View 1 (cartoon, one colour):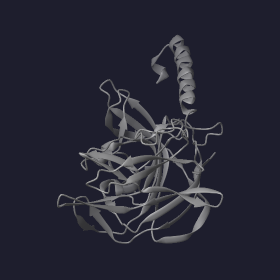
View 2 (cartoon, rainbow, N blue to C red):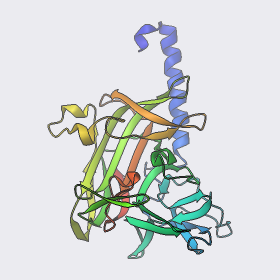
View 3 (cartoon, rainbow, N blue to C red):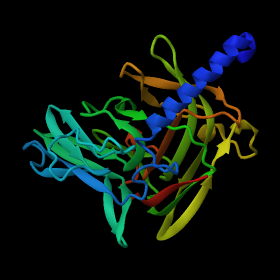
View 4 (tube, rainbow, N blue to C red):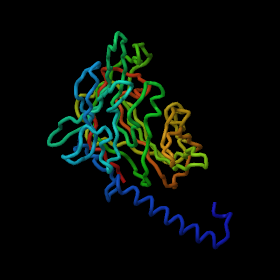
Length: 327
């Protein structure tokens, strides 16, 4: 784009971009260490928010686990409690739909001298004054923000702002995993209905170059990424599994599948917070070049690939540990 400017503008533009790059790197420092790894990606550090459910429900105190570190003197009944240096969010959800509701689907599980992350899909069943409510929620670990309290079952995607600022270009993502994925899927909100096809656990990473227009709409070009589905059962840990990232135009790949590798929103809706703090849909306008530098990253691990739509198998469990970028 610099061909449109005179030499003096070119020099100014380079200086301006250098400042922007420095600002971007500084903003990343709260989420990454000096080697470009996400904070707490070993998944050994956890805390829990505590929610006292309404008496008409369980009346119990529920732990909503999060990845990170908070002060031992923190108010653990503060539903907004979070480690500001942690990029990680979970689908451990605090809802306020007249009643206080807490759903936990992501758990720290002891592994060796540390912990791993257990993601599970399950149905929440309630009977409120004779009204039966059955809701399926998948366990998901992701980078971004969960918009709480959740006020209803409609438009669940709008409760998640996906992605964080990120300007690195890893060659691959490495992590440990095992899983047990159910074969029969259902959709459960107020009732339970069968859904065709087997369930799948999923790992996905998307690198984007985002921008915002004057009206607050957010757009992006796809810089790179990887996506992997898991079916069946792997009962023993697979350690150090490596999933390479692809950069540039995915459509040139022989294995390209527009249903799973296409641009947003053709493969599914994604919402993000804009500069005004409003949650808006994200639109990818095209593919970047292999040499482009991203500004943001979406990444998630989930026990049911369509769990955000209340679809999945209550038998699905996905364990992950030691998430690492390979540079």
